[in-house]
Length: 160
Image (tube, rainbow, N blue to C red; front, side, top):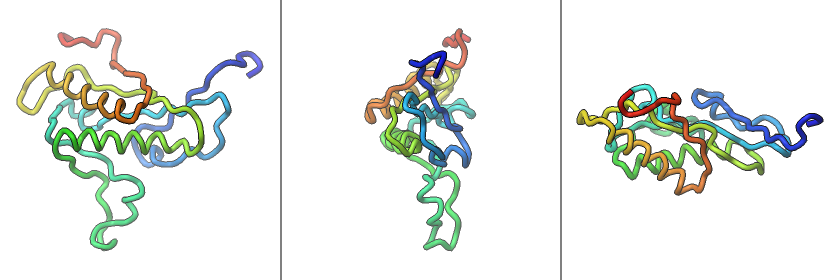
């Protein structure tokens, strides 16, 4: 603070795993923003877009409930069917990540994006990237969340 009194500190929790579900443990400085990352794991790792099918992590508040009255543990992932349900799933996950700051600070999605070399389930090319990006931005717009779009590499283009 002495050298840069006007600096803004972006606090970025892990994007995946159990640590990504834990609220921030202390008070953030006054000049901090909460900047969680969000990625659709199936799109990121599988590099495929299917608007009719996706997966989402089971929300933390539902993991402890289990299935059949707690007789079985909740699965770590659950299916999502249909484009509007995928966008609603993105909204739920983004909202959960934003609320993990657990205090009154500005929120900026610090990283979000889709690979530019996605393929669709029917083999189409760049249309899959455009459709996946549209679904992600629809969720961001619905929640009025500011974001930083990550393009993976500076020369990330369709022909790459």
